[in-house]
Length: 71
Image (cartoon, rainbow, N blue to C red):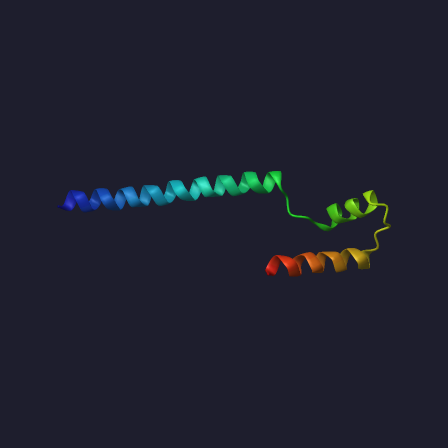
């Protein structure tokens, strides 16, 4: 009886540990492929679209994106 409980607890602990590391690896790969947009990337996108980016406009767009992320 004791060995069944011990085996179940060890299997559960191993499953949690393995799941954590797999999820961590997946998120690191995802963020490497799809980095979050920062001010430098936003400035570059605006320049590519033919706009002249001012710091005020960049701050407004960053605030708008952060507001949308929270929803």
